[in-house]
Length: 576
Image 1 (cartoon, one colour):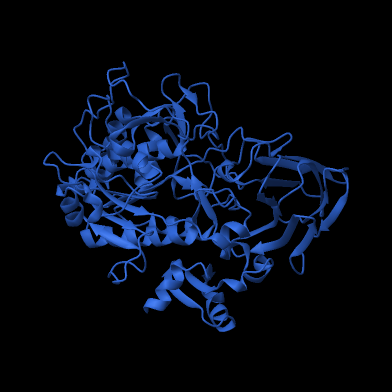
Image 2 (tube, rainbow, N blue to C red):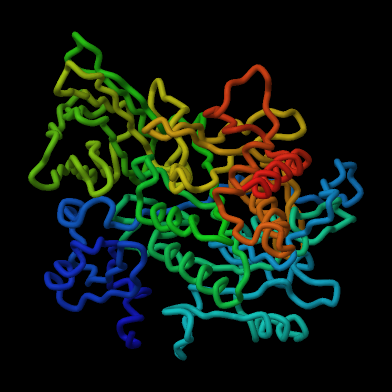
């Protein structure tokens, strides 16, 4: 790629699309000054002038072609910094078998990493971080392995750590701290003063610091401008980078995602989920993602139009000063649905037909509503309706859902954005906490982690619940993720909560398994599927619960039980 072509990836004057092979050439022919930056799986990332992203872009390009927006899945904005080092706490769990993630690479695509933190250094003071790709720092000299941003390798990081001014050499900073939390929980060094230890204390790190989502994309989905938000295309670039780096180093890779979104259709078919699912089938690769923190948020509605009913009424309360939001309706095939909208004052807005020839636009004062209805997207036969609200009138909105083919069960789901992107007070009446796993956690091939509190053995109150809309069991496993002690910025520690915390914990567990299999040569063809088998079969289960469970998956991760499962696998291999 030329410099001008690479520049389009970061330039706010260019919009980004994810297109399949069938549509790729049509897009390039239809939009002058468009460029392909990356081909992956059966998709391409294409960049077109942003003035082509009009209100009817879902109609023009398709919902899955427009990058989705991801938010953080850890609750630590009000977490208490741990100041009293000697406060009594449970001792950190240590794996008795002596595994520590040796020669295993754990990759994070997140907010970066505080590389100066002591929990990421070896005993000799050098860094355990193999590389940092910072997408936010533009480099005028094109680097071989990346198309934008700047890559800092281990040698530069070590040089920076010896310097009186480290940031003059490696200026990458984790301003938010989420990536530092993730890396620390998965594989941070033991700190006896704070009674902390990561799971895989000898693993190596590879980190992608995501650039913020482009302004046009946040505006398109009516996400508040000040929200911490990342876009699907940059995450895909990060996945591509980490996989390529692991291949170059000939190291097994555990990829951990602590970010997610709720505008995905909930079947794991977004391009990013398809890409990750394909990568997970390779040997020496493991992928764990967070289930999400959407339980008990009032952000999901499930309804049915039963025989004899004309319609189903849905009520949504919209909070004061709501910037906007995108609401996704998902109707089960082979039915079709249409929706009548009524504003809080009882006024009829418009009807959304089951198939619209174009995007429907409604304005009233400062309020804008855009609706798109489609059946049979590229990976699904279900109907979706995307409703984008900007400056909605506060109060109780009503949606009357009508359906066709009444001799079949007519069920539907509606999802609001993840709570990070939504104003307080915007909730469904009679909300349903299930089917709230965020993308890409619904993909059947990925290990999806939920969170619980090991102090009282209760599920995290806001943990997203399964199953996927096709009733595929999700989440897969539950791990510690409530009030977990974690490294933070500037060598401080916090107590953090969220399913991204549990995903990081599981990533550390997977690094231990990868060390046993690949580093020690016991199972050189270690795969994500095999690790999922070991982790789920060895999980602790409550005799009073049924499994797989939409709350707990296959149970709570249990390192002590893994030896028995591993031994059974070895015996099967010897028999074969």
